[in-house]
Length: 330
Image 1 (cartoon, rainbow, N blue to C red):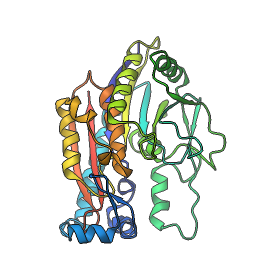
Image 2: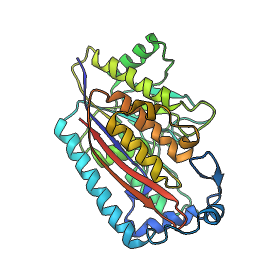
Image 3: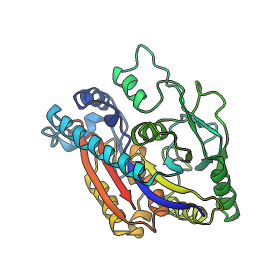
């Protein structure tokens, strides 16, 4: 019988793959962004955000603060890597969002499970116009070249079959045709590179379309599918210790501390009603990755959330950045 022995959730913002002294390079791109998502469902430019907010975060968007959050975040990631190593899982199930890295708008399933033998990452092709910080971050995402990681086809097939039998119409994929054109992206590469400590552990990818309308799942659906996956794992014929990981979040590209703390508090208290009732406005653009956390919370109902860390990572005076969060269930 398989068993979920650990749940993890971690932001994968470029800030975590980039030295704090270089976060200002990422911030420069915020100033050009014409579609910054707010939790009320609106999209605004940086200039519009600045007119609306003013500059309340100027004292937090400094190199000194960047270095402070960088150090705390890397310490948190080290702690999570240690927790993962301690349970020595046979497989790591990663819930991530595909941002047109493997899939495209020609076919974007709402939820899909990969059951191939090998997971190949997509090599991000850089041009002379690509900002320098992106090249550095791609290394942390295992997208600087094609990287190969072991899959977990037997358990993945069980989950696909079981979900279909339980009336969950799940997408399925078994191979990456040409990783130079399309392959696994940052949501998976970051977790493997940062938390596995160089160890080869089979990975079972669950791909959740959080980013692209019109078929992004609701929070209610994400939680329910998480519950269904956990039930199937507990009834698996395989003798496997499984760790489940949510990759991404929290709020971005405008930090919403109230939203982030609401989600973290609901996870701590196992307040399912709050997690299921997150609105579409709260789940747009980068903040949509909260759905990955919601799904893993559904998988981890039998565990307790015993540790969280949260750092509002403001990059600019008007409040762009990422809510950097980490969580462990055991």
